Amino acid sequence: MSGNALATLGLALKAQRLACGTFAVRKSANRARGLLLANDAGVAAVREAKRLSEKHGLTPETVPFGKDALGRALGQGNPCSIVAVLDEGLLNALKRGLSHGCAD
Image (cartoon, rainbow, N blue to C red):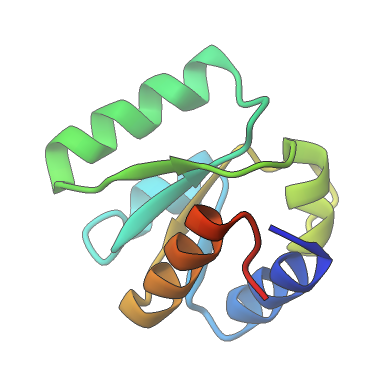
């Protein structure tokens, strides 16, 4: 994923198509279409993603950047290890981008 993909994620959050952080992801898990995990996510975030994926039938995708970059791109003051994608079209675009090495 490139810088443009990170900017797209930031816009998607403003459009309420993403939920960032463990609490927000848990709260929106029933509406989520997929999960994104930072490549340096901690054990607790990975465990939470696994639990939510099993409970809600979601597929977690590890993104090729860290929680600091993800948090900055989403306008958060803190690192963000886990993100719920709430829009099917956005999720599909991100998956295509991940499989090709970029999401422009």
